[in-house]
Amino acid sequence: MKKLLNPWTALLTLFICIVIRSINPSFVESVRLRYFDTLITSKVPTPNEIYTVNIDEDSLNKYGQWPLPRSEYSYIIQELYKRNAGLVILDVLMPERDRFGEDALLAKTIAKYPVILANIPAEKTKNNPKVPGAVIIGSEFEDKIVKYPGLIANVPALEENAIGVGSVNTMPEIDGVNRRAPLVSTVEGKIYPSLAMEVLRVAAGDSTVQIKLNENGVEKMRIPSFGPNYNRLIRSCLD
Image 1 (tube, rainbow, N blue to C red):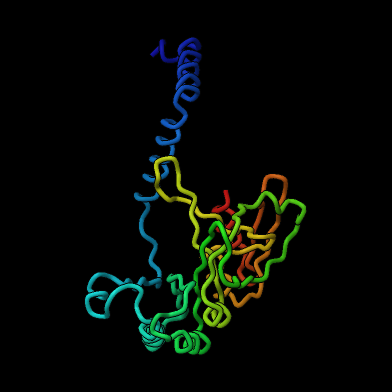
Image 2 (tube, rainbow, N blue to C red):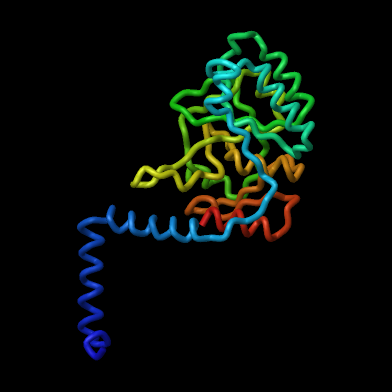
């Protein structure tokens, strides 16, 4: 016990930790990430009313090869709302015209029922991405936001009729696991929210996301209609 409390033992332990950190930082980072994974997986699940509808192998066997005709997406959306869905997020990227010529049908459905679509960062922009509103404080620090050269959007008929569009982008860790995604990013000087942030904005009925920047990047984000608890939740995601 005395040896453990000896100052030289503490100094030796500190020296060893510094050496390990300098020689193999990837190992240290992997241990840190595994610890965070343990915290998440050991957490008691939080009850919610969020449901995922998967297009699985059985669906493909029944309806045909991927991508499905867009009339099928239209049917799925209408069925979900018949079952009292509050908001539908269609996480299916549709940057080319439907080979069955059913874009107009799906666009009509999206115009009738609230649907959020997804876009994805890329090397080059395709189609015309919908730009949700954003109010920025500290715009001189916009260069600190995650930046992508381009964005792949859905065909115009779908993009224009969607109630919202959010980016599906991740930032893989050194072990290849996706644990983080930027809540906002910039493309060609315009700010785009992530799919998660866009869902919150639409659910709140707000026209904008409010962002405060500083020299380190995003300091705070706010969904105006939500109260302080939601703002603290977004802040914890940024941290």
